[in-house]
Amino acid sequence: MISSTAAFARLGMRLPVIQGPFGGGLSTVKLAATVSNAGGMGSYGAHLLEPEEIVRVTGAIRAETAGPFVMNLWVNREDPVSPTAAADFDDAVLALGPLYRKHGVEAPSFVKSSPLSFERQAEAILRAGPPVFSFVFGIPAPEILAECRKRGIVTMGAATTLDEALAVEEAGVDLVLATGFEAGGHRPSFLRPAADSLHGTLALVRQVVEAVKIPVVAAGGSADAQGVAAALTLGAGAVQVGTAFLACEESGALPEHKRRLFHAAARHTRLSDRVSGRLARFIVSPMLDALDASPAVHLGYPLQGELTRPLKANGDGLFYAGQGAPMLRHHRAADLVRALAGPAGTCMVS
Ligand SMILES: Cc1cc2nc3c(=O)[nH]c(=O)nc-3n(C[C@H](O)[C@H](O)[C@H](O)COP(=O)(O)O)c2cc1C
Image (cartoon, rainbow, N blue to C red; front, side, top):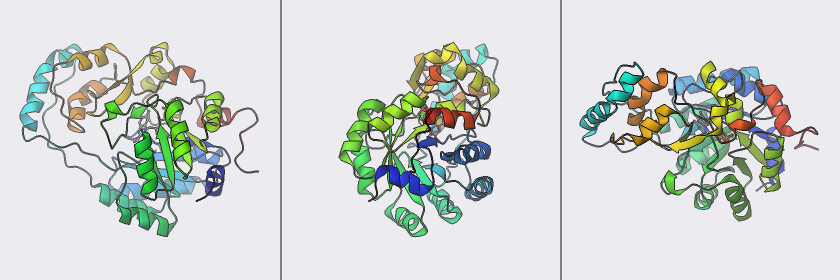
């Protein structure tokens, strides 16, 4: 067991700032490498990547930075599929018909998903050997964690409750990410339903720091130096920031998404499970209101996402954002890392 700041300094971080991973094409090699080169630690969300692509991306980041970086996966990527899924899908398409027509998009057809295997993805992580492997929605099998240890890959598991943090520690994971409901992206709960695991960052981080011996990373709602300093005061050794990096020019988000993150509309966000099938935070919009009010059957992840794919592609009203969006000021990742570290540059290594 090593002390909190020492753990991050040993990783090679000069500043206690981690750029959170983004799934679904929103992470880029350039963003991760830029953050790592600026003294923080960049991440890449790989849960939608085939194993060979995971190996390729890991190599591409390594080629762009000598600093530490994180590759990230979802342990649990598929909700149970109902035997009536195809009929439920058609019913839901009918119920959402007015919304598709209103936005001028074609209604989707049912496609049976062919899930990516987490085990094969994790095997690719082991082969690629990134400095850090982070995961959400559960804890990998003991054999995978043991293999990470053998290969010197530091592991980090996300927790939305104190019980999840204790489970992460108990499994022998190196670092725990305490993520409050302010955060952008999905709520990665795995012991209780996400809607029943809505702890704020302030309460969660402090509880976790008091209860576990492994180093804690705080996530959710930090978007400036004061937010980072507050999380460090609570006892976190580093802070993971997502929304503010998503808005930077190096991220893979669409220009319209970035524009909305800086817009006054981002002052109002809401958790909804109607976009992807799992609870995630979005900028409130008429389209989100219509989806949340729809009587359409809830299909679970990832099938629900097929229902909303045409609406997302329309670019009109389904944008991920955390509650920190109104604090966004920076458009370039290196500037953001420096700003988050504060005027004195909150140094981890003396
Ligand atoms: C669009 C989006 C996608 C995300 N995808 C992932 C992901 O695939 N895996 C993950 O561990 N975290 C994911 N996150 C969470 C972030 O990495 C980070 O923990 C979170 O955004 C921090 O809270 P903040 O947005 O308040 O800064 C995502 C966040 C956003 C905004």
